[in-house]
Length: 530
Image (cartoon, rainbow, N blue to C red):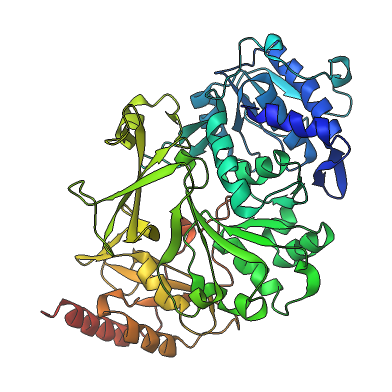
């Protein structure tokens, strides 16, 4: 069972009548999913799909989406997520860059016309005419091996061009083999497929349950944006494993304010995708100190979803802190280097480098970029390290996430780490979410910038003067935001991460003269010799 479809077929053989996928109350058993994906895989092979080739998948959330992804893997090809919710210009770029041999879609999906052949799934698509028997290597255009690509997921590029990360079957199975015993994953578990399949968190959400004999519940769109809807779904489907970005979890946490019995079956919550401040979980732990188990996992697309893990305990939420990410999963080895490529000492900050079987092949069609980010491992002959660009602090064998090496803010000559200011904001009573950004100063001269705080309050009300006093007690003057904006919710990307680009500049204050005087005084204090 060295590939993803091999392992799925194993569970389809031993548990054919167990439900594998549920969407909107309708389920497919392992046998039904096996049969439908085999038929579609044969259509894909006839269309030219196979190992080292790519097939685009553009489908809405549904059981058909899971059928299509599995079918692509069975054909031997790698799947390319083309989420219909994405802008057409981005989809056009992905197709032109990845060059899939065909696209699996549906009649009601609008995707840009690329001239590529399409396979449309519908109730009368003729799939019944294809054999439903298991796909063997003899059926494929060439042999499928563990090191062949399983998927290509695009991430944002610093140049403005998204880059496709190529991840193999071996890397995904290495992740699963490391985490199954760690979390006690089994056929008794029910997971949610919450995130877009164009976000690598989905790889974990979809394949971990299906390759351990469990069930995955595809979350309807409305439940990804509403904490109340999600809470109802978790109760109705008796979900046991939930994966969330901290930004998404804040909505569920508010819906669970009364500590209802809706989460009685939930045994494991896994955070990922963005930095977690444990202080934001203090109210949750006040209601649920012992169950479910809360775990923070750090990872990146280039190293196959998850890299490190740590249990978040109630006592860790009592004070705001850096984001703890724990220690590497089995099979990983890590280095933390300073600017001189020397390993840092206890309590010091450096850039994280990672090696192991989960390190991906690199970037599709970008050998130059691959060479700069995937470097030789000095301790492993022929091995490679991925240079993450993430700053971490070392504490023995455990790590704390500090931030991106390239996302520090600069303002009036000062370097500002957003996480430091956001941690102070989160420590203020009633703040449920926060973010900071440098924006044009509406009360200054042209070209002037200012630090802006964006906060979400549980009460919906904010005493800005009191918040400023709180920040002044914790932060030096140059880290205290000039403007504070109260939001109903922080803007999120389709991947449910904070969308910093959607944070709007503040409006000009009504008392501009008074505030200008205040700001001039602040600048003098900030620039005063220490």
